Length: 350
Ligand code: TXA
Ligand code: MG
Image 1: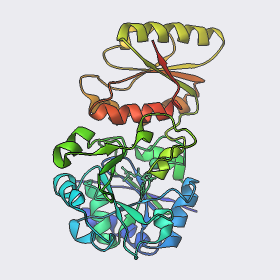
Image 2 (image 1 turned 180 degrees about the vertical axis):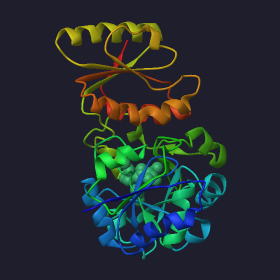
Image 3 (image 1 turned 180 degrees about the horizontal axis):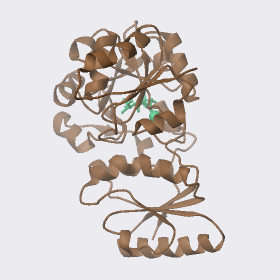
């Protein structure tokens, strides 16, 4: 398949640049789009054949449900059988934005989109390109992250081209995304709202709006066989770089000492070593390939660079990666969730 790649100029009129993409989507095609979280692989959420094309392009198991993206509140009632109060409150506060909510689904949403579930995940993206394209296409868009299944989510058009060129109809290059981590997912279909995936809308923010919000225990710990995550996608080894990754927790000085020692040992064995450090610690490492993930003072920079750093290490073909860790509150919960998964829960306490 010949994949069209178009670059959007935000200085020029947007609609004219998106018309072709909207046509492709209306006709059942697949288009990669920038959103404020990560790039998504979009297709008609109401057509089983369209979601099938997404699964194929990603190489993703089809029991993993997709998020339906809408452009405004008027488009929600058609997709859900009920809007619980918690959903209404969160929508008012955080939509459009990096928040996905799980609702009881309406009949019109096919099981091909929900992975056979009776619920549907819905998000209203704030990114001007994503939001406008949904409006122009006139249909809700199912859109998982636009990576090959198992690879780190794409935060730049180049990442999408790497994974999807030749597999989909079009890639819209809207530059680098803002947030860099996938949306927060909250299930509002039950009695107590439950956090299924941490993201930029933090648990602290959700609780401020709703009061009690439970956390799916699958979020932080490794999955044991009898533990079933409520977001089916959370069970797959996600975000994984190709190298073996170790996440090091503890006091900064000890973390640096441990990583320097392990890096030396790995280098002596002839391995290519990658180190994920921060602005604050970069000066303390001696060996290996250093990647600065961001600044501890501004954790949003860490979120923004996380997937890109993992992809860079793939490109450089390192054999092992050692990474510093972060506190697990606020945005740190989402950062640590992704780092833990990338490391396959290989965490060392020093
Ligand atoms: O930020 C995002 O959410 C991005 C952009 C493109 O919008 N999309 C994204 O989609 O991350 P995806 O497919 O990579 O992740 C969707 C997650 C999966 O873990 C899936 O299992 C879960 O949402 N999910 C979808 N529908 C669900 C449902 N009905 N119940 C529970 N979990 C659901
Ligand atoms: Mg994904």
